[in-house]
Image 1: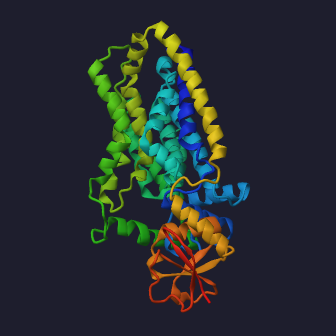
Image 2: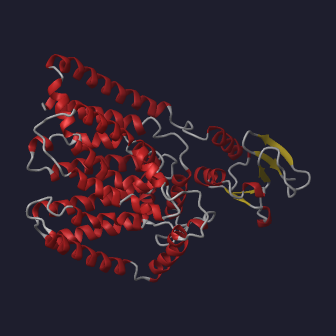
Length: 470
């Protein structure tokens, strides 16, 4: 496959990446979990909380979230300032770094197979076209950070599979990356421990003995580092709280849940659906090419190790699958190698000469257009348009008061509470808190029984009403 096609593929990848995240880089609004993580990072930046106690004055219930991602995001606030777009920038840079790691993983694993090595764009392209990728990195998910560490662990582990050299250094690096991933989002990251056993005999010199050795050293060093990190009183207290607030409820059969045990498999099907369509095409055309790679199933199994165990949890959100998508895209890319080669051979040179410039010019145009949209969309609402517009109006009417009383109907209205806190550092308080404020929030036309007598409605919105207290 010639260099012109490879260059065109990378240009297409750049266009897709830019189209996914750049137009809304400076826009407002994201999924609620991403807002909460930003609030916790903001609190750390403002010295309201500490590394092992990630909470804010208004969101103490979130103390139980692993802290590393929050800490890294807080560093971005220190560097760029406390702006609503910083969390989007952080996630975008995570996406770019993740693309680089997937590229590195592919080239490292196929270092001795030059024709395949040159197709490093293929797993990157697959990763980008998964619906899960665009959603996660557009909504500031903690998995964005964790996936960086799990991918690094996969890279160093596969390096040992290929070379069987520097076992102590490799085991230590695997343990460090595994621990960093754990401190980012918890035990879902530990699927990387399965890799050595899944790749037994993937290399003629890598057998069961080597797999046992590297796994034992990795586990021993991980346990040592884990005990070392969580030996301090603050870290130990945090870990106990994390187990009580996150792990035990997730595994408890008595915990209320809206999820069935197979929900995560449905999410996995949706996340890999574009790949499955391409695989169907490969089956239909039955390409015969020089590529004879049979190792894809090992990556599939590694991806399943990072996804199927989630079935035991009461929490089965789609974004939990993001770290497992890396081995999946590598496995699918290997399986699709014959299809790529077949397409290259079947397309006539004259057709390629017409198509390649079209893709190149089109990709360049997309990049330029998205750069323009990045600035024209700045400050606009990416989602929750009515709510965000009304919160902006409320902030103006209240002159940015730090606390506003609210009706009990807003107690668990987390979009209202979180957007106010993240964007304006305003906390809404229940009536019994008796805060010093001149304003009272309710749902539209729902005053409840605790609205102070004589209060005057000064804003009637589609999502909220604001009253001035006499």
